[in-house]
Image 1 (cartoon, rainbow, N blue to C red):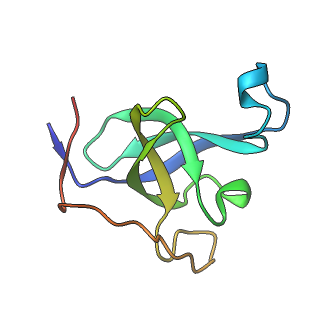
Image 2: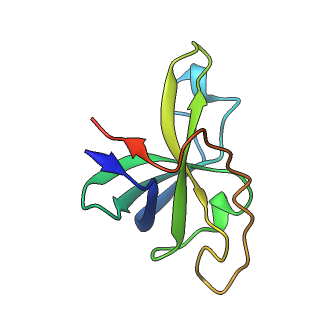
Image 3: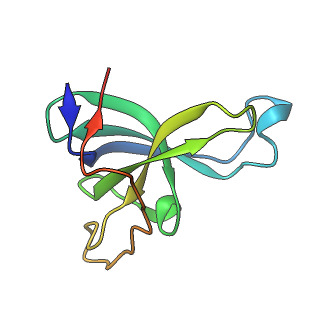
Length: 102
């Protein structure tokens, strides 16, 4: 399935206490359920400016980021005009306008 890489925040929570020692340097961080435009739902992180104040209904765009081990994971960033009336800059650079979703 090909995807536009765009979606909407369906639910969100902010993690403030690290679940394991490996996450201590990452807190606080946002975990969200994203409803991708093409239909699938993804549980992933919200990253970037505004991620800790995002709300349900905010528009997001996928960004592929490597974790500490080098594994590349899809994460989402608030889109321009991401919702909640706030103007957000996506800062997202992608190689193509579509993304293959397994």
